[in-house]
Image (cartoon, rainbow, N blue to C red; front, side, top):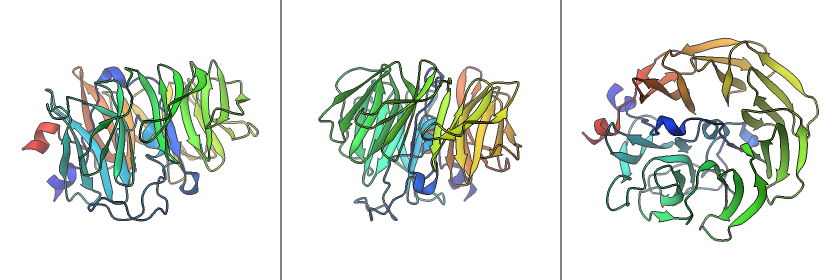
Amino acid sequence: MKKVLSLILALAVMLAVLTGCGGNTTNTTGGANSTTGTNGAANDPGFSGPANTVGNTAGNLSGSGFAAIQGDTIYFCSNSSGAGIALCSVKTDGSGLKILTDLSSEETKHTGCPKYINVIGDTIYYYSVTNSAIYRMKTNGKDLKKLSDQKMFCDYMAVADGMIYYVADYKLFSMKIDGTDKKDLGLETAKCFNMADGMLYYQNMGHIYSMKTDGADQKVLADNYAKSILVADGTIYYTDTQAIHSMKTDGTDQKTLFEDEGRVNMLQMLNSKLYFVVDDTNVFSINTDGTGKTPVFSDNKNVTWMDFVGDWIYYGNEYSGFAHFSRIKTDGSGKELLPSYDDIKK
């Protein structure tokens, strides 16, 4: 059983794409790490429970979205030291591990390395780092389709309300989930996106903005630089170089919650606690009012991303020039290495 549990997640990404600030998608009804709605059962026979209303959690997209959860199923990517890459699924209890599609095969035309994974109903959406394009496929691994024609560097992607919002080469676009009706929403050089309650929040040239998802009503909320942005329950949390700040979504009630002498980054939220990384190696949590600073874990190989699944933190680190993947409980216990694509194929 322990071996099966250890196979839950092996996330794939080259270290070259693990930089920059991540976007976030949130359904604030359940907090920053909630995606679940009441859409009923999906059309996937392996799926049980309500379908997601947004494609991934705010926290996981902040960590670049290398895994997504719907109901009791985790969808994730696993790679190897060679060219093997597969999109996999597993139940949250560790059972039912399977490869949905080998993304390094001739059949899939080597679409490779998914990032910003979003799952809604019976469909998975993701950005391919290898092919620099957006794809969708069924949760059973069938019907892979390319949605975007142009080659692009994608810095954010979120799926909600029948639309895909994405940043291509630092410009914001939207399109329908079938790939039609592409629109330029008129932003350039913007980053650190977060979507909540029909609004987009982002950083641009040292200011934090909000606007509607159709590009209207652009407003400056704060004259502050942000490395990461997280919106939950009517509050914007964001990091600059050495601090965590908060304000209401209308820009009022601005506060500094936490300051440190080191670099603060990778803002996440789980169970009304904020999680973050200091100097790339030390992970802490605090309450949303800034109190209760608690060390969670340290990794001297540098934490390059973090995703939250239940009571576990999945993360990548550097070791001898390669990315290694681990998981650890949110209280800092139970650390273990995750297997590679080659291990799962055995």
